[in-house]
Structures are given as C-alpha cells and as structure tokens.
Image (cartoon, rainbow, N blue to C red; front, side):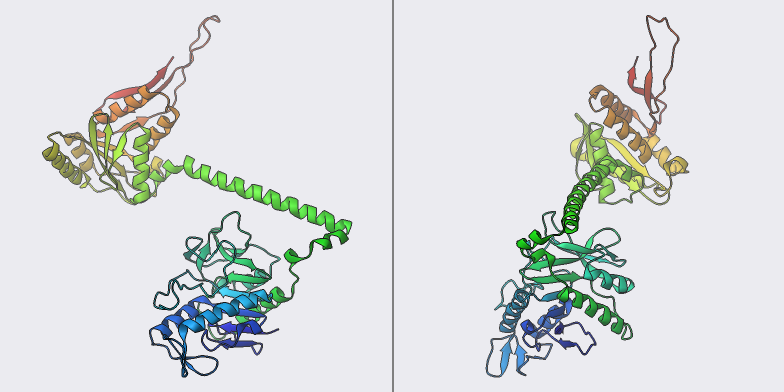
Length: 471
C-alpha cells in the first residue's frame, strides 16, 4: 500500500512526506494525508514570495505563469485538483485534517480559490460555510465504534483538538464518526464516487516522542479504510445469495436505522420545545447580555406591552403610556447608580416630548444564587430612590412569576391589564404573590362547593391589586 502525506509529517518508511509543491503525482498512491492549514500556509507563502518552494521536477514555484525555469502556482494548484479527483476515481482515500475554510484571494489566475477548492466536492459541499464552521475544543468521542476511524480517535483522544465542526443536513449521506462532548460533529466520512474522504480533527501540538504513536494509529486506520470492502457499493445481485441469517440481519439493521432517524427527529423536536418553554428561566441567572435583555423584553410583551428599542435602554408602551426600561444582572448586588441613568433618560425624554414617562428597573442581583435565598440583591439606597422618584423596581424573580402567570391567562386581557396597572402604580419594589389559594366552604348539597382562586400583585407603596378572581 502506497501512502503520501502533504503538510503533515508522518515518520514511517511506508509514507512519502511532501509539500503541496514538491509532491509527485498523487493519483499513483492508494491514500493521501493532508493537513489543510499547512497547505493554506504554503499557498499563501508562495503567493507572497515569502516561501521558496520547488516543484517535483526541481523548478521554482512562483505566483506567476509557468515558464522554462519556474512553475506557476495557479497551474500547480489546478494540477493538484485533477490529481485528487483521479485518486478518488481510483477508489483511493483522502484523509483531511480539517480547519475552518478560508479564501485565498491573492491567486488572481485561480478566482474563488479557498482552502478546500483542491478537494473534490462531496454531495452537498460540506466544506462551505455554514456547513463547516469554526470550533475549538477537546474531548472528542467516537460516534461509530466499528468504523476504522474509531480506533484512531480512541488512541489519540487526549491529543486531539478540533478546530471546526460540521452542521450537516438530515438528508446528508455522510457518516458522522466523531463528536465533541457537546454532540457537535467533528469527524465524518464522505463518499465521492468509488473514493472516500475522511475528515478528522487535527492533533494538538504533538511532541516528537508522541508522533510515532500518532503515525502508527493513523496508518492502521488508513490500512483498514483501504482494505476493508465497501459494502455500500456491492452489486445489487449479491443480495440474491443472502443466507437466512444475513437477510434477517439486514432487515434488523434497516429497522434500527429507521428507528434511529425517528428518535433523532423526536430529540430535535423535544430540544426545540424545551428551549421554547424554558426561555424565561434564563432571566433568573443570565449575565447582562443580549440574550438576557431580549428575554426581559419578551416577558414584557407577554404582559401586553409593546417594546421599542434594543439593548438595555428600551422603552415599553401600554397604549399611550410610556415607560423607560433599565436592566441590570450581576453576580453581586446591583449598583445603586441604576436610578441615575434612568433618571437622566427620563429627563431627556421630558425635554424632547414634554411628557414624563414611568421609570422601570428590572434588577437581577446575585444572579448565580437561587432566588429563594438571595439576600439584599439591590442596595437600600436604590429602593429609596425608586420610592422617591416613583420608579418601579422589579426583581427578576417577580417578573418571572408575572410572565408565568400571564402565559396561563393569555386569553384574559382584563387580567393582564390589571397586572400592567399594578406596575404603573408601583413606586419602589414590586412584590408578587401568585400562589393559588383554595378555600372550601360547607354548603348545601344543592349548592355544591365553591373554589376561590386569588392572585395578587403588591406594589412597593402598599397597593394591592387582584388580577384574577373567580368564584
């Protein structure tokens, strides 16, 4: 078996190590190993004239056209493109150490050149954005134990660092053979005609003493890839010679694959449902980032407000009434200076529109602590300032309780209106009590029993509103 490696040193007498420039004809080999980043660096170096390289015939490789004494870079790359195609047409194996795709715009005579332009494109072009995206991490797990790549990933598990991930469509015929600890696809096999492209995460700075073990595992993997029969390309008529055991095994495999696809679809649907149903929980612990702010805005929308503006300086509307919104989410107590920035916005609004809006602060102090045991999430000075200026100070857990209640009362506009009125009347901390209270009264058998459900929102100034009451 003949193997060539380009840009990836593999110390073994059975491997010919070359660069993209000086490699002999690649289709004369059974397998080719390529470090895609090393090839990109060589291309850029030759293009910028910072790397002196020679072709297989000894001529210097330069960025210009080919001549009697030099080999043109563009012609060299087009030649390699054809050679990789011929290797796969011969049933060969391409092993790629994968990095995010990049463009090489400096090669004018090869328009549109990118890192993977030389590689024959598998179905769906998995090396383009966003199917191939940047990523970074360790702890790669084997996703196909019987695949030849499985042994390599296990042997090098603590020396691999993936730099890119695949986001392949459900219709893709690629086989995922390795995943990150979070489930992202980081190693895959693609079929191109009779050939195979195996995309692997690169190793992480191997020492010279470690490269021998790396080479041995890599070559064992390639040997299995080259020599194992490709069951997917066996002729159809072979099935006529199936033994009863083989036929039953094929049926079981087909059923298992169908069940796996259904299970994967259900998992995706369940993941989407979990994200959607638990999105407001993020308010309780997230830092003050874009996701936190958007979740708070969505909470006010559920309460019946319209939200204008983005970031931490949005304004909310309830009919013609306007309120300016100030947000804070911190690991400690929120700053007592929040009211100063809110007060400045209120005054600026008044000078522009001659109307003084309501001020609302949503505070998430001690965000990493369970809300039930948080102590002093905002300073007393902030509470007093809000009471003085008539601002509503809403603890994030109170907003969470309100939006949970409002989601259940979405078809009762008068209930949501009462909640908004309570917020508008609050000067200070908004306290919420939304626990259902059930009172049983003894009555005549003809009258039955009445259940009374009551929910209340208590404003910081002592006002109590009853947004829902049924008897």
